[in-house]
Each structure stands twice: as C-alpha cells, then as structure tokens.
Length: 242
Ligand code: F6R
Image (cartoon, rainbow, N blue to C red; front, side, top):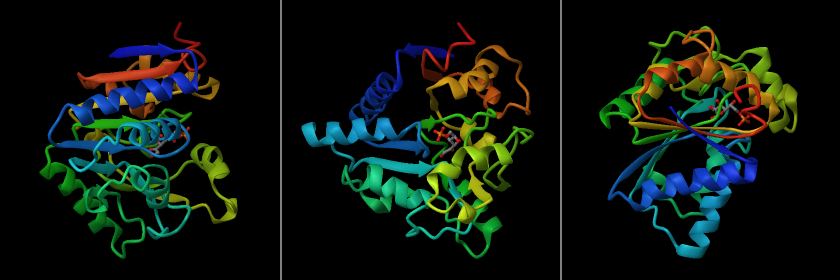
C-alpha cells in the first residue's frame, strides 16, 4: 500500500485532485468510481478550480458512484445524485449520460443492485476508485461484519454511521436508515484505489487499515488484499500509525 502523508485537509484535497487529473489527462477513456460525504468535497472543489483554469475535458470520463440512500429520488436535494451534480458533474460539464449512481428510489431494490453490479462487471471494474473511510472502518456503506464476497447490496446503516452523517441532513429525523452500496467484492474489482482520510476522527479506522489484521469486522482492511491502493491521509488521521 502506498501511503502519502500530507499536513492537512487542504493538502490532501490538492494531492488527490492531482492524482485523479493525471488519470483523466493520461487516458482516452477513463472510468472513475466516486464517493460522497465530507472527505472528497475538497477534491471536487480542486477539480472544479482546475476546470475553470484549464478547461480540462470530461468528455471521455465515465463515473460510477459507490452508494445512494434508499428512498431518496435522484432530484431530492439530500440525495447523493444531487450532491454529485452540485459539487462535480455540473461545474465540470460532465456528460450526465456517462454518470452512474445506484437508484435508491427504484421500486425493486434487489433488481437495482443486480443491474448496478452487472454494469460494473461489464466494464471489468472501474479504473480508479475514490474512497473515504467511516469512523467504524466502513468503505462505501459496507458496515463492520459485511462479507468480503458481497456485491452491490442494500444495507441497514449502523448507529455510528447514522450519527456521523446526521449533520448532512436539514431534518435528521428524515435521514434514511438504509442505503444501496457497492459491495467489498465490487470495490476490489477496481483496477486502482485511492483512499482519503483526514482528521482525528479517522485515526482508529486508519490504524486498523494500515496496521491491523485483515478482518470482516473492519471492512476497509479488505483493501490489503488489493495490489494497487494509495492512501492520502493527513497527520491527524495518521497519528496512531506514526
Ligand atoms: C460515501 C461513502 C462513505 C464515506 C464515509 C466517510 O460515498 O461511501 O463510505 O466515505 O462514510 O464519510 P465522510 O467523508 O463524510 O467522513
């Protein structure tokens, strides 16, 4: 695992945007797996800055998001669809027909999981998967105890995840308690993985990922079974590791 230590969130975001831009600029067609939440926001802001300055083209970029809340329609302002449109897709003029996010409002959720998994299977896994990490070591919304063999599935979010994400909801009582997420096996199909972590709250999860055993009780530890993972983390997040 390649570990890049940076000073803070800003530096993490710049380094991660540079990493992604190298992929975008260096290929005729590129498939990116994308994450939401607080961690990648700065990265997306850096990509938007770059777009405004250099007019980097996204016409050859295809995207596959990790997850979406169950019960939120794509136009719900609190959905991950809306997040991606606001923070990345619209500002960089990404062709929307080349973006893919699980549909959390699909009438048949199991069928939706199967459709999404087959989509990723059909491209042989994404070229570069961007990941954050939950305080309990989740990646995507694969909570502790998830089998490493799982493909895209519906999850019941744990209390720890619900509490950590309540801040993203205007009315936390409307926060969905389930999500559709790429499974660990789906994530591990990616050709390359970039995991970001910033801040004290991620210390333990990062310690388990980098120093702990590979165990289904820490979903991120599965990344030790992949041969092309880069972690960009700030000193706060790496405190227990150093
Ligand atoms: C988001 C996702 C989650 C987050 C994780 C960390 O698409 O899959 O695994 O990466 O919950 O969230 P933040 O970045 O808000 O600390």
